Structure formats: C-alpha cells, structure tokens
Length: 305
Image (cartoon, rainbow, N blue to C red; front, side, top):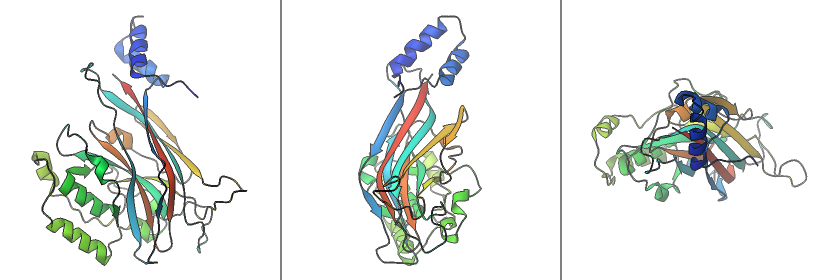
C-alpha cells in the first residue's frame, strides 16, 4: 500500500522544498508531479437492489447510493484552499444476470451509475444532506426539482452539450422517462409550498427560472460506470461480483482510468467548488433491468496551496 500523506506532511515537505530557494509555483508543481496528495475516502457497503417489480415498459429508477463533501479548509490556515486533483471510484455491482438481446458481455446496458454535483444556493450552508439519501426517484429531473425547491440544493449542469456515448445505444437511455406517475409527482412538487429553511438569495432567484422538465438524460449528471450486461455471479468462474475501478482527473492532472463501460468524467473535477457535494446515483431503466449494488467507495485526492 502506498504512503498517503496528511495535510501536515504536505505543509512540512512544501516548506522544506521552498527552503531550497524554489519559487512557490515550482514547489506546488513538484508536489503535484509526485502525487503527494492527502485523500479522503467515503464508502458504503449497504446492499441495494433496483428492480422492475411491475414489469413495466416505463420502468425507470434513480437512487442516491453515496455522497461526499469536499475537503474543508483548516481554520488555522486561512490562506490555504484545498483543490481537487482526482477522484477514484470503486463500484461492486451487477445487473439481473440475463438478457434477451445480443449484448451479453458488452456495456450496452440499462443498469449503471452516474455522478452529480450538488451546490447549495446559500454559501457556506451547513450540510443537512444526510437525511435525504434514501428516496427512490423515477428520474433525475424529479429529484432535481425536489432538492432545489425543498432543500436549496441545485444540481450543476454538465458543461458539454454532447450526449455521452454510453447513452446512445437505445432511445430509453437517451431520453428521460416521463410516465404518467412521474408527471403527477413533478406536478405535486410544483404545487407544494417550499420546505427550504434557508432564504433564497439573488442567485437562487435566477435558478428558479430553470426548466425542471428536461427530455434528454445526462444534462445534470455524468455517466460513471455501466454494469457488464448479463454478468453472472458464479462462485466458480471469475469474480463472483464484478469490481469496477474508475479514476477521473482534472486539467492540472489529466488522468483517466476505467474500462469500456466507464464514463470520461470530462470537466467533472474542474467543475467542483467549495461547499459542493458529490453524489453517486444507482440507476436502472427498461423492463426487466436490475442494479444490484454491494458497495461504492469514493476516494478524493487533493492538494493544498
């Protein structure tokens, strides 16, 4: 196991290198090149299953499986700011284990994971997010309207206007599912009085004009990882449950790791701001598709300068 420095270690090494006469910019570049970064790990091993109990053509479900706050500034070092360098995801999961389509072993799946960035309308708002992670949503638009209206959290849009390639293999993956029940729930959220305990500021008044009725998937989430189609859970052959590893870097650390089912994470890390929350969604769509989740780990690596 590689050594993981603490923030104190980083400060000590930074001071030692700076004492040799190197300028600050070069000192920070040296630490980045050496990947001398503290890290924070968030994980869950709750067994969660998303499945189509009604065998419906309109089946679609999204659930927040894991969330993480960004590294916080140390009050003793007011001039320092943690800056994210990469996020490593480890996902342990599988789909329903069968398919009627000629896609077994591929990643043309409707059982997958996404990542979103939640940003509160009030700066430095103390997170009370923990209480809201157990809801099941038909789609992310309903969740987005609920959290914005009743919690003051807004989902940051993905910068690219191009749909991610992992969503292009069928119409259901490209288009948000708006069943009769989903429309009804959306209308209920619109009609409910706001339960957001914080006053809305000027930024929020602008965000209230947002459309919470998108038709395309992936406008407020990044495709993270798809389950290999019809991956069995044999005790005797291969991994009983597959483990997926995905690493997303940033402009200052342009790295990426993953398999054919992993999303690129383009601009995800660079879109993060102080106070944001990273959310991992488990997803399933289309009749018969399931998502069996055994655990997700999210490791945040960052520098301080």
